[in-house]
Image (cartoon, rainbow, N blue to C red; front, side, top):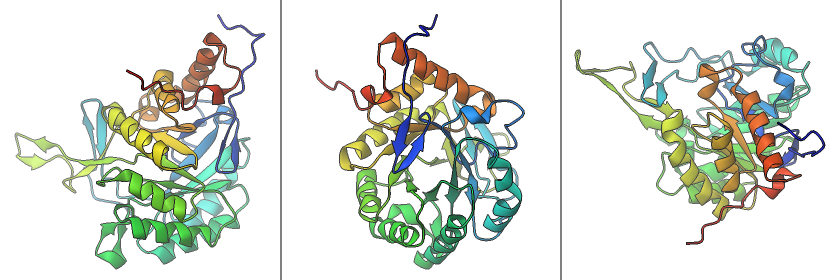
Length: 311
């Protein structure tokens, strides 16, 4: 039973963006808010991060493009979205009615595309921050991911920061050799916060047909299977940067969220679990509050970064 006399403060500040609590929805798993509104109280969230937006509409990849895996799922959606102009016109008005932070995930194939999207969003009422997806292929550099090259990651961060007054959070890809180096580069480029991890490149095979399950052969692995990898990478990044870090990857309950915060994440994002349980974010918020009450912590900052690594 909760002690109603013991008040806890769950608010956090992520790169200048004040949130009522540290629980966000991960991009691509919560649509544009409308899809989940009938099932839960969106106002209780710390932030909604909408499905990634490109400059122009994208059709995405051909089916099959989703595959369930043990403890997770593969997706090769191909970043299907209506484009930034349609979002501002058709989707953003719905989100304005809620008392939440709206963070818009953006993607592009060139640095100029990222800049143009950021400029458009910076003029739109109801957008509170930008999350930059640097897992996308850079067509100017032969298709190599923006997030795989520290110099390019730096350049794209600088470019986005140069055209917006909004806080900028850069979402890192785990498909690199040294994620700490990438994190240092985007911090040097002016990022206000960092989120990680994005999905891990993976595949599955239909043994009867001897073909990949996904039309595109490989896809992004998400869900509980990647949580230990995400925790390890978040810990590495927390040690390498001074800006806030947001943990993402395999979070399905309050205990998972607490793990990320104990190792130093200032907030978390819930992704694949939304598909399984549309109430999961609210349950996580309540679970974090229960934990603080149990251990008599009045402020969530008493919890963040308290990992004891002593032998």
